[in-house]
Amino acid sequence: MLKNYLKTSVRNLLKNPLSSFINVFGLAMAIGCCIVVYAFLSFDLSVDQQHEKKDRLFMVSPVVNRDGEANAFGQSPTPIGRHLAQDFPQVKRMTRIADRNVIVRNGDNVYHEWLRLVDADFLEMFSFPLRSGNLDALKDRNNVVISENMAIKYFGENLDPMGQTINLRFASGQKINFTVAGVAEKFPKESSIRFNCLLNIDILNTAEPDFTPTDWASNLAATFIELESPTHIDAIRSNQSSYLKYVNEAQPDYPVERFNYEPLSTLHERSNYIRNDISDEADQEARVVLVIIGLFMITLACLNYLNIAISSSTRRLKEIGVRKVIGASKQLLIGQFIMENILLSSIALIMGFIIAIFLLIPGFNTLFTVDISFDMLSYQLYIFLGSLLLVTAIASGAYPAVYISKFPAVTIFRGAVLFGRKNKLTKIFLTVQFILACITVVTATMIYRNTQYQKNRDWGYDQQSTLVTPVSDFQAFTTLRNEMLNHPDVISTSGSGEHFGANMTEAIIQ
Image (tube, rainbow, N blue to C red; front, side, top):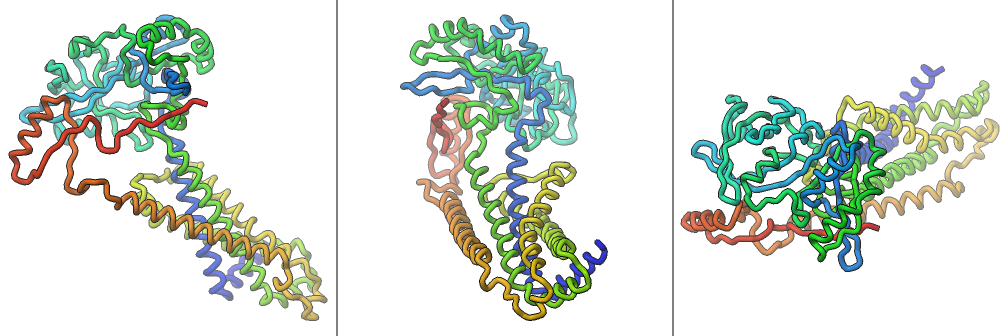
């Protein structure tokens, strides 16, 4: 029976090539858009999820009251990490994180580099696999762990960086030699927490004489703790009065109401509500807009199929009547039409997948300067595609199958059946389809024009001819400026306290 259904379905598709093409192409484009939405959400929701201990790692987040508003911060008091590790047996490990700009000397080459200073347990807590070296490399304060990109930048692809020496000059003027004791593997693109160069944070006692690990008035980029179990965080949350006393005595102008402890597993998701945290912010608005567009597109395509299927059914009246005369039941006819729609939806799914991979996703990445993709071996992808096929086939084919198969054979042969002319539901479908089409076109046009406006707007300077480079201090800026002014191709130079576009956004805790 299924073989017969399949043969009949193929014949009907080939017999009506125009309507078949319109249905297949419309569904394919809608499915392609849904695949783009899935790829974006899959990428966005997987940020920092590669860390094995993500559910047991918590970032300390002070909540500061400013002008009656509670603002959560990613930066935390310098001593709080050690106090938590000492005061709570539930804390298995702790790492402080500080960021610095330094000058790196490698042979005759001098670079300005961003580095991250952490405690020795950092590599044990976070899942950053090393291409070379051991996870305990940072226990020696004179060791450095570098990224794969930095290894290639300083030592090339042929020279083994392990055991090599690099010289770092800190803002204080201190120059210290470090031995490369580890090289990290290439970071996955879903990772928002990265590093170029890792040092033991205790080196700041030497590199920066004014660094005071016990100063509650100073802040670090972040503090993370690792617990034996995620449930232990409740005991820590309920015993923080002493820490509040220390920090508020040290900086009374910015009183801390409480300390939040944000799991790494949700840090990216919650980053919009945490100021100055080390994770990239999640784009909540983009998620909502893309999901709405995907739903609009698939609904529009299904409605288009519904209307075409009903209006084109007049060509199959005799087939339906003959089938009923020879004993075909309503259920068998419904099965036939559903099979046709599954075949059509399967073809559309394959076409939509190809369109998404080779056209829509590259275009999306170019338009919004992102790099989304998905794992072709992921079982979630095939669950999504199967579910999309099932939903599309049923949503677009169920009503036409039931509607077409309900008429008696006698009525069909008398010529008394007029499909779609007086069907109120068909008129509703056409109206809704028209409204959705208008909304989709207007929304797509607005998004495209806004994107082009943002890319082409006048920022007050020539973006193509202006170069920005970070420097470690004012002395380095003065030296670089004097050299640049002597270059014949440099028109002018200027200094800035922050990079173009840098800002501090308000994050309110409700």
